[in-house]
Every structure is written in structure tokens, then in C-alpha cells.
Image (tube, rainbow, N blue to C red; front, side, top):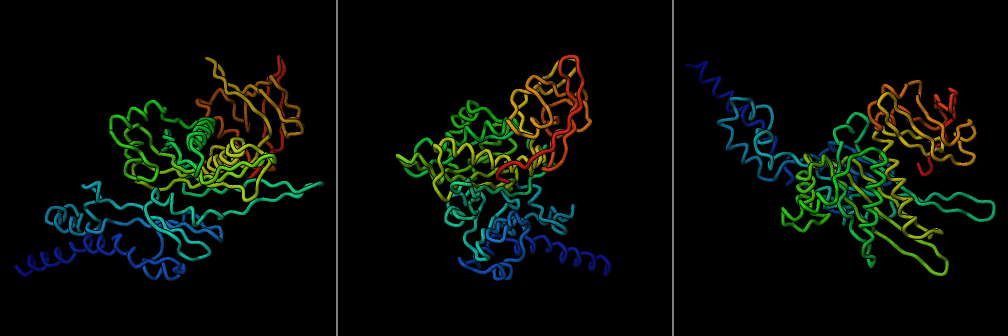
Length: 405
């Protein structure tokens, strides 16, 4: 009897472990935060982050995975059942049986080691503008006659070559318009969609998204996390892309433009931020807003492609088209930039590239695999096997660095 009583007492003590965990790890501890707290004060009040999404010396983005404020009550009520499977002892049982009680991500943005804003990832899209509007520095390149100014871009997040295959399909939501510039969000979201398609990411069709909107009878707002994630999930996407155009200006007669935009990729199941990109021009640039937005979006998506392991940091200056035949695959060269590594190496329009990095394309099944096979970092040679009529040639252009990274 004494042994049985001891076991029962020990079980009761241990069963409180998960209840205590959900209480300590509650989102209620965010109430201890206040604006302008130092980084050390944040750690003292709520502990170290679960994940560092960005830390460039100026802008820091931390992620905490927290439980709902009252989750410990659910855990306590389920203890009589969950103790038999170890739920109350080792880990919150509600993380397994109640999807609305699972840990969810909360992001904190610090500028120069001082807390600026915090909250769910999508809810920060509006608030973060005040924090990160000048979070990156414009690249200034001296020119012989004047100085040429380029937009600055940045991209961070945990997405990598090992996890990208989990997100074979994405849904690009319509971005929020810039102030006094209606329609700019739709323009940028269309640009981002095309750039992701170029990386061989499957995109949920707009018609399907529209159908889901209608069936759900909701007005989707980019800052409404619950609706955005639900719509993306129902539409069959593994991740959603949301964003906003923060600035869209043009001046006459100088014909210069200033554009600023931001985008985020988020896992529809967990709400985890996968990639956070932004770009802007501090000074007016000689371009139309449309072309400047396309350039900024291209550089942001390029950073995403590099982080995801789809492309490398180098390029050879060629546009080629992936072709699949019953017995062979190849890249057909469509355009070559003058003075590019491909041009210098002797590549010509019309050439058929049948192997990359000594890997024949006959063994490649998809264009995504081909892109990974041909990815190269700046300064490295890219061995190519070429079919030019009846000739087989071996060329090795030396990759140059992609601009803006």
C-alpha cells in the first residue's frame, strides 16, 4: 500500500509538469514588455528567443513560440486522461489534441538593440513599417560622371534547401496598396507571382483563391492572420505570401521614382515566418515606379532563391528555356548578355545545354532539379556540355555575382 501511495503521489507531482510549462510559456508574459526596452531587458523579462530570424547589427527579429494565455486550464482539465500517455508529464497534451491551443509564433522587432513592436507575424505588417522603414542602407556606386543609386534589399528567415521542398505550392495574396496609390498592391503581387514561377514554385491560381474567398464569405485582409492562413490552407497552398507596398512615388519632369515594399512567406500550418524580405530606394531613381518595383521584387526573390538553395550567388548572364523531350532534356539558350561570363566563354544563342556541373540532364526529372544542378556561386566555374549542331563542346564560364546581394 505504501508503494502504491508513493507511486500515486509521484504521478500527481509529475503530472503538473506540462501544466506548469504551459503556464510559464504563456503569451501572458508579453505583458511584461514595453516599447524601447533594451535587448538585455527583453531577455530578462521573457527569456531568450526560440529563433533568431534576423540580426544585421541594426534590425533584430526574434521569434518566441508561446501558448495561449489560458492553455494551462485546458491542460489541467485533460490531465486525468493525458497522464496515461505521458501528456501531462512530458509535454502539453493540448498540443496534440487541440489545434487552437498549440504553440504559436510571436515576433519581436528590435532596432539598435531597443524593442520596437511585437505580436503575431502577420499583425506586424502594419506596425513594422515604423520600425524598419529605414532598416537597410542604400547602395551608392560611384560613377565617372555622377553617382548611380540602386535600391537596397534584404531577406532573412529559416527557409533553406532542406525545407523548401515542403512548400511546393504557395498562394500569393494581393499586397496592400501604397498610400494614395490604388492598385499598386495588385501590381506587385503579380510581379512576385511571376518571379516565383520562374523559380519553379507552384502558385495557386487567382481564380481558385477567388472561389475560396467567395465560399468562405470573408473579406481577406493581409493583416488578418487567421483568415489569410485559413484561405491559403483551403486553397491547397503550403505557404502564403503577403506584403505591402509602403511607398510608390514618381516625379515630373525628372522622371524619377521612389518605391518601398515588403513581403513575407508564412507556413499555413504553423504560422511560422519562413522568409522576410524588404526593399526600398531612399533617394529617387531614374525609372518608372513599375520598373523600380520590378527590380526591387526581383532582388528580394533572388535572395529567397539563394536561401532556399534553388539558385546560387553567381550568374553567367544567359536566359535559357527548359525543354523536355521523350528521351532527353536540355536548356535552350535564348539570350546572352554582352560581356557576360557566358559571352566570354563562347556560349551562343541556339546552343542546347545538355549537362551542368558534370550532371547530364537525361537524369534530371524537373526544372527545379535542373536549377539546383546548375546553381553556382560567384567566382566559381560552371562546367557546361553543349550541343551546337553536330558538335559537342565543353565550356566553363566563370560566374559573376548577382547584383544587389
